[in-house]
Amino acid sequence: MASLTGTDRVPAEDREEPGQRADRELIELLNELRVALPGVQVLFAFLLGIPFTQRFAQLDASDRRVFFGAVLATAAATICLMAPSAHHRLRFRSGVKEQLLNVANVLAIIGFVLLAVAITAVTYVITDEMYPGTLPAVVAAVLAAGFGLVWFVLPWFFRRKPTPPHLDHPQ
Image (cartoon, rainbow, N blue to C red; front, side):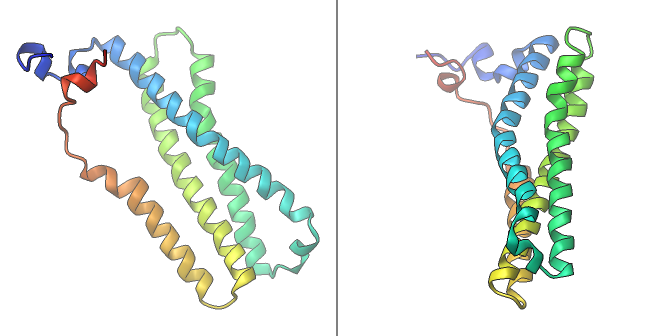
């Protein structure tokens, strides 16, 4: 069992060299985006097919505008969430990893905001088709609040605690 003395008390990220940290952070970011991108791509594919269905013509002008906003938000989310991979490939071994990480982090956050907007908008349109009236606005508001709380507010409540040594270096 590892002792809790010396460097064992220092989190692994604090023992890393700057280059090692940048490498690890970039790998973590790209892995996170690999999880998010399939969902965005499926949503985008779904949205692209909807206007070609017979029922789409039955949407009122307001729902069409919200739907189009969802399509645009999904396209913009796709741009933002795929950009870090493109930037990494274009600038591979050019010594700008720290800058790449800063830009990629901002783009990922913007991409997640746009994805939340798109999902909320699509949910509004679907709910409005099923249950016209005030329910669609309530559902969209609750969903938007849920995204805001779980994706963007909750992470700020995490307290920094060192990872226990047995979890930091699994054997």
